[in-house]
Image 1 (cartoon, rainbow, N blue to C red):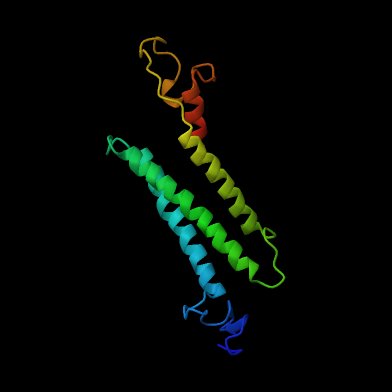
Image 2 (image 1 turned 180 degrees about the vertical axis):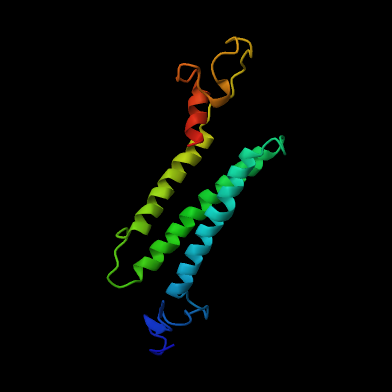
Length: 167
């Protein structure tokens, strides 16, 4: 570390925020450590939690009584980890010289993903209740399995929700 522990000292190409230790003796995060934290949080969200949520929905017949709990937990984990990754990235960006927020493609894509994730999680919590239907009511016509009737329209709010949730 150079600069005698003053703010903005450099250490191997990364800025030490505040330079070394704070007044309590705790080490301060380097900018590179913040980027590692950003990558770790985003990787946990999108390489572990999200695939787990999708896989439990696909293979729900393997654990029919508890798949929804795993699915919801994994989605909530994604929803907690993703904004945390964005906050860490914004904090790291605020310490860079001449760099503005949301000026690069990665920044914009990250914000769009966060917005879409928020919509998807809200959609999950706002789902309409399952409707009880007579399996013989439509005489076998239509496609209740994919959520739309034979004419390409939705017959219930639940089917609209299911279509949107699977996007």
